[in-house]
Image 1 (spheres, rainbow, N blue to C red):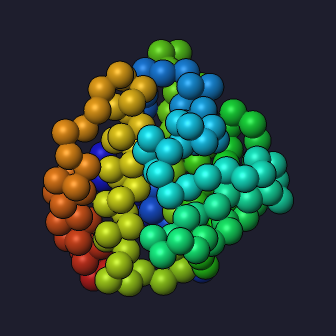
Image 2 (cartoon, rainbow, N blue to C red):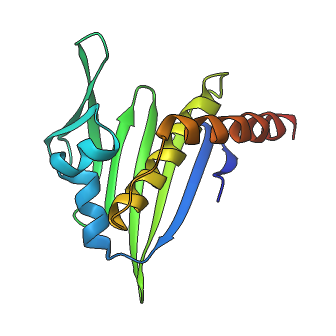
Length: 160
């Protein structure tokens, strides 16, 4: 369940894979509809949902960063910039739901990388819980558990 890390020519790809018992259309709505997006990543806001469009990342200081949508295939693929990195969601229908891939292309693995990976991991757990009609007791407590695991995972990956 932990993200797979793989070296590529321009850095590292972190691949999160989930199999959910929910239709791809339902999952897609959590990635692209602001009222649902706010439930799992309140700082993000889709401002122009199209290839070449944008997503706004609201910073804690009241400013925002614009994330550019690089690829959009409605109901299937959403890829956007994340500072110098990229975040890509892919959805594949399956007989009893869908398969979700979250691919983060990381140009430089830093001491902050395990924090980000734990964050994405918990975000996916939150989406799944919301789809199931549940909530997580404490996102912060869950993040701390996964952060420790990702610290070890990234350290091991860097030693290979």
